[in-house]
Length: 309
Image (tube, rainbow, N blue to C red; front, side):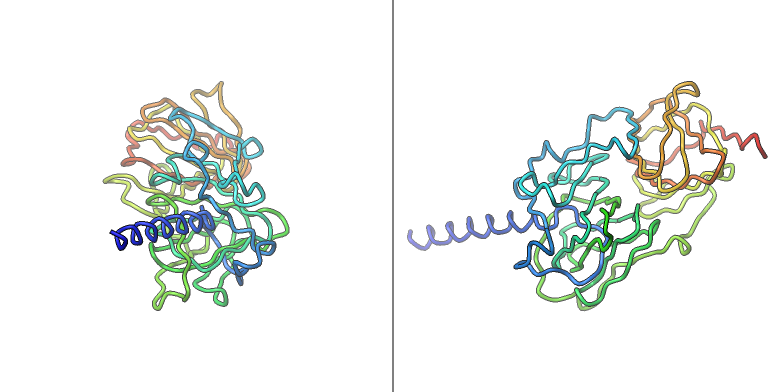
């Protein structure tokens, strides 16, 4: 009887400690640079999303939605640490399962060495980010770079900029954090610079670089490159998708007379089977991230090149 009570009490204590630690990295993403030890919170304001309610982190209702970067309603991942990581989920719920979110990391933020139970892909929306396999083995993550972090592999993340850093995180499951005492023996994580991305034409000059999944078979995430001035007709996709603009000026909406102008780091969600059109500005190419909930169907898409060419 006493043994049972003792085991129960220990189990509860372990769960409580795990929950607190989970907060420490709530949406870890890019990074690198020596980390700040847990005892130096001022230098490494790691978060504690333990108390972050699911409602606070959940994505908005599944309807079409375009949000200009300046208007993104970021919220603290952990309400008790308002100066820590801030997130805006495009889809899913970080506390409950797979999700995609844009993350704002405070200037000078550093995480301790840690792994996650689920793998994730990151996309750098700004400079200043670093990511690495240990506190002494880190690499700067150039804007536009992507990285793949395998599940259960220790790593560190941070923002060395004097202003906040931004990135996209697409997790294959709920985010958690488990402190690690040592780096992975054979780390498998990768960082790919913009110049090293592999592109394939999708249709009419639009290119795609797949980061995860298979566009022909099911859900996937990828980067898309639209030529300057290129526009589509009003069309639909059978799967919902989330997007974020990395570069260029992009216009999108339900019709040509209802387009919203988006600048870099703006985000959107498009519900399945909802009519919409895309138009890249004339000044430069538009590079964007997209996370599709199903296969990519382009049979209804008609592309029109820039009129200036």
